[in-house]
View 1 (cartoon, helix red, strand yellow):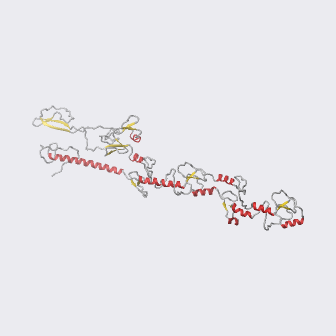
View 2 (cartoon, one colour; view 1 turned 90 degrees about the vertical axis):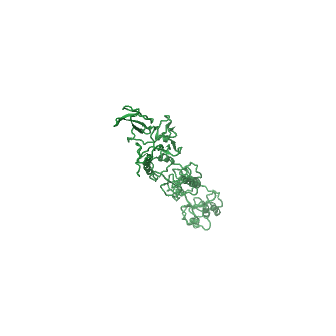
View 3 (cartoon, rainbow, N blue to C red; view 1 turned 60 degrees about the vertical axis):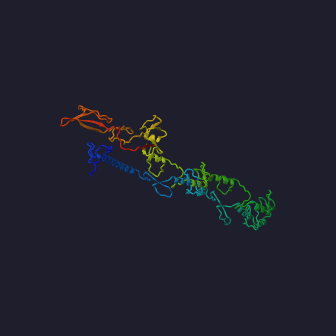
Length: 532
């Protein structure tokens, strides 16, 4: 038993007829030898032909698989989805479900509405930017903007305690009216004081004639010198007056009237006022020991503690909503919680719903988010042609049927292929490639294997007919030697003399071709579509 001499050719399989003799051996189609093995030979050739083409397809598919790599932070490619927020993988993409989690639980970058008790790093005192102001920043800024009051500088002041007042250590502190009242009750006023108990004072010299207190010793010495009636210019004895409405300049107030003054007037030293005391309003620039009334304090605070703006640090009003466009108000903690609950963090956000992002350029190879537009435009860019095992195109694809479509509605595809496959109506439409019933051939592009072809051009079929001939001796319609047209419809041509045999008979030949109108391999009809 021997093997058939197969070759990788696609040939028609010979059908054994009922009248064919049973002939084994090496098949020879020309002579009919080994006729029973001719169909097997045809099948063997087809099998060898298929193996050649399958091996070629394997090689091409292997090349394609090398081109499709897994995506990473530096290489674009296919990516695996991850449906958690705990992964540290840099080679996986978050699912839309996890995106919704981030959308539902995180704050947006633009106008976030925070809730709960949001916190943030405290900016350095003096910062004047868009950074969030914490309560610590406000307190520090107020402390820096309004310094502590001293004897030399105006500023904010603390109230002294009773112990500090008693110890005399309240030099930089203020005394409330309530704490000052009992102290003043123990003091005498400068204007007509009413002293009690056994007050003492240094005794002036006898020649003294000023506003110094006169002690009993001074008086007695003076009386001894001259018991004259006292006047405003002469020291002497004086008459008492028990009232406060006299204009006399030669009488002295009684001790009772002195008590009235003590009880109703404030001490010069650390006075404790009651009721609603008033005082002249100093100049706002005053920086001395004058009493500051409420009007002066408000005016000063208006110049020192000003409302905060984007350019000036100061006091700020809270706003309890996310709909305000005010630039001089701060969000409440409640709105901070809203932002915390509804917006995504910058670090590892988990978006929900249908998050949107700007579509980056085709050469971007970084950690920028890849939108569906980027994937559709650059992973499978407009103009990409593929065969689909479906009778209708998938989303984002159009049939390659030569149709005229809108240049506006399919602007990306028009930008990619232009009018290569047809000018449409010349202004608003353009044509798709028409691949119905066509094989696709690689563009020669200067190689020379298919010279003269322009990109996107249609090439009609070229007949590759099989020529069959037969010979005979002295056929009845023998013709002289000469040229002979070969019919293209599969019929025989006329006979032509090809030589003379040893017996003197003419040997003639005639020809015919197969009647096929095209040459094609076995094929499967799929739907060619183009990406838009």
